[in-house]
Length: 251
Length: 208
Image (tube, rainbow over all chains, first blue to last red; front, top):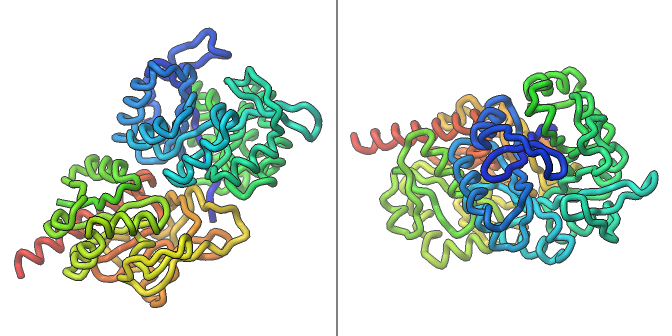
């Protein structure tokens, strides 16, 4: 049977993995290639690199990280952050990325999803959705790193992304992100039930039990987390052991 | 020298990176004569069948592949590279290489599609390239699967709601639906098996 995926997320700026909140107090966490290799060896199922500055002049640095990672890491990895054009997608895929994640540009110009999926295949197009709760059953889409509200509802937008050829949805709860109090299970479940394509849940992981909850109750196909892995409190092997002990099929 | 078939799509780079890690020489083949001289061929791929077949035909690579397979050149097809070995794909109605009898059909399942992620391989046939694969989890990303007419070709199965064919093998030709170049240590092991298999085949060939 298809196993649930555990995905460490690496926030990258200036060719380094960084940690910080809202672009402030960025702290250096290490070399992205070395960290990617370590996570791969520890049993991560996939990796996500997020270019948190998304500055055009830094793109060459990101492409270099992707090339070096592809030479050493033999699990799939996704690259996202500020991607606006199909040319940028091609560059990153050629450098060795397996998938790219698009977010703000996809909201502004949904045809980007259609064009990218047609050119490179749905399997490499991940649409990232940042959603914030406005009522018990209603979540709105934000863009620009969670700073700008759009008129889209998260469930409807996920459906449209699927219809346009997205291969997966990377769903982040803005409310839960950074809290370490667990994923937004209702949001994840609502989106996972609304689409046929896999949903990667993100935002709020503080303990392996949070991953267990989002992979069962939240119906997510994969769970993405950053700090619980980076800070060493719950390394990947421990997290996977916990999930296995709780009846969740993992590699 | 292992030739990687280039038809403008795909993840050639990640396969070549894996071969570099295993310290084996490979080259990207874009023309028929580059396939004719190859000791072994890896046919990787992602994407749809029709554009891939059109690109192969445009350069005469379809004929060259059939010739190389006919000569018994060790061959590994990956994902689309497995699917194109069959007669026809339902994905876009494309006529494929027709090396193996059968079709490529949308995976019949109530589970989510595309089938993305790690899944295990069972019922693995005895073949040097597939040694150690039984029970291993490998990385998949696809919605279509091969349906061989001759069930004896089936060399591995995987379950996503229903079982489907995840590996075929006949003599020197092996095809896998998953991506060994993205399947961590287990994937590198399969590629290493293929390299050794190709070396043995080449040694036998030089002796004969």
